[in-house]
Length: 357
Image (tube, rainbow, N blue to C red; front, side):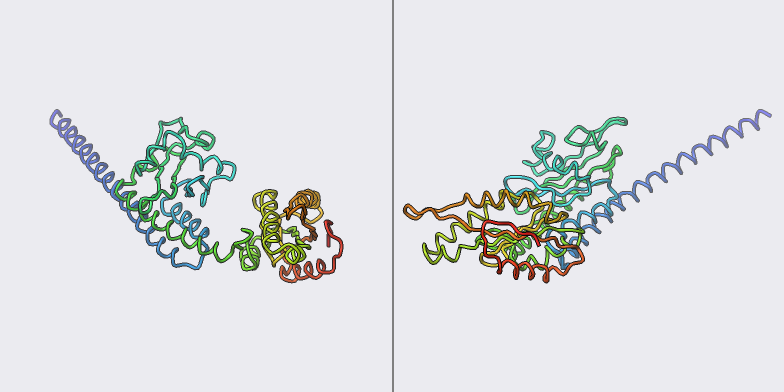
């Protein structure tokens, strides 16, 4: 009997030992698989970078597409790419809620991350169960893991890349050397895409006014108009600019044109599209609204334009403007609707007035 008990104890001990060994091996395999998975994710992201750079997408769409690739490959809750223009940050691509985007771009100024930017070193933050991180918006969004990576290319700071998750230790398996390679590739990617953006802006921006030109009207603007049921368009004709050019010289006319453009830019809200349609005709395109709804705003703008002036000797030269408002629906033919506005405004005789058609 005693022999049987000893034998059973030995068997149980061996079974426990075997179980411990099996579990240990399985954990090692799981850890290896996780590491391999992250390595595969890194390789997939780099491969996708090359494909995205070659794709026929706008510069901003390329960055947004890459951010989606990062989210899908890493399986993270949030990913944000913020660009820095030397003066301020802008959220170029992110899947965080719009409410927090203005706050997330400012975390680079916090003490938690300022040193990392200056040293070009990533920073991994995580916390204990039941707690959250403390940088801006982290508490509200219950962020428990964050990987902050400053992005440089050729020694120039371009911005930062931020991974976030609502679970602890979310990025433990991301190796430092792999992260370093990835953020280096990201720097090259953003540098190339920013160069593309400069070319796009050079093609789409009117140099004299800083407004978009007709090329953008029939490309980027069309897409925005199609996304809203109603859009208000204001056509502004600076009616007396040709007479000013003839009487006082083109320099005075150009000065008043630039003053008018700056007045409009400083007056309108973010999201409004400004286009120089022709020499003296400007378009103010306001998505997701109607002509009657924006009429009071346009009346205030007209009053401001009337205050712009230039002096030649004792002569005070002011602008005479015509405003035409029109609502364009998402199913409308934009070209046809703007042609109607051109035809109507050419027949207008009164100045410093607003009409709705």
